[in-house]
Length: 392
Image (tube, rainbow, N blue to C red; front, side, top):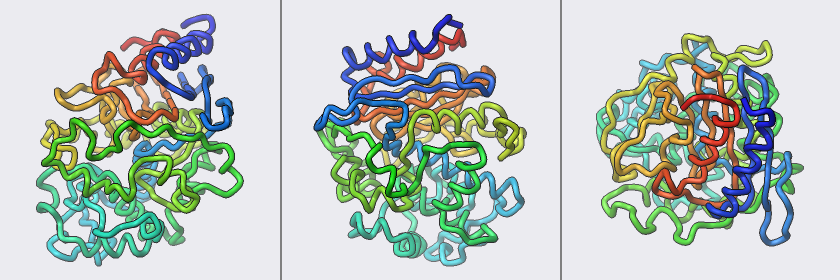
């Protein structure tokens, strides 16, 4: 390990800003359950010049799916959810239009057949949990559940969240469940899926990409991404900076966190489901999160070969030809047992259970390069491992 891993990684962050075009960054890492890197650099808001500090919060987009998946695994750990049962067993309305055989497992691994958002959805309607779950329950699947892969970019959150809500004896809203059963027990004090008002001033401002994704250059015209992520809900400052979107439970995409809380979440998983004497999941269950779901399949939403997904709903690091790094977790290195989740725009969290390493990287420059060589996140992931003497 470097004598000062923080200094080494901070130097790498300055390179990420000067060479790769990053604006504001935080990097935090845990090794053997202890925080060993905690550093930040750059600008949080280009309109005011405000600098990033330890408490700055960033939108983490689809990294939120990892939080949602663990919430569901907590219910399975308690015997309240069985992965092999149909979603409709817990949520009868979901069984409409031939979806009755789609299982909880299918939901976890993006094979449930309902990746597209309801027609006519607006930011206001997306903030209405009941409206969203009723529309998803009444959807006709685009294929027979369990037969094909299609990344549930946004609908994932309402499906997983409603399963948790319906199996929760207290019938709490999903945001409340995440706070009380996941964040609070392990001390993630700066991770929110629906923010309280008082944290609003801490949130960094996004710099939008040159072309709003989906629909930008390089997107397969046959992909269903514009239906799964409609432009009315584009991952931009104008949408995800809205007060109502930030305060709702948009459980696949509107998580807001700093790198400290993100790394702490993955540290719990790197330690086999326990952190600082608090156990949320059994070791055996967490070991399954490193098991690949199946050989990669074509992803009908992204229009590319599917990224590797574990049977626990996490992404895995093995590169797949034609799939950009931003939809994999290549920054996690080469250990095939590593797992985590990327977010739109490049924010990422992961753990390597063999090295007992957990990393969270947050930033506000939307979009990552389509090549590993041009990826600031891969560069920073390599810098973390080098600073800590962790192979891979």
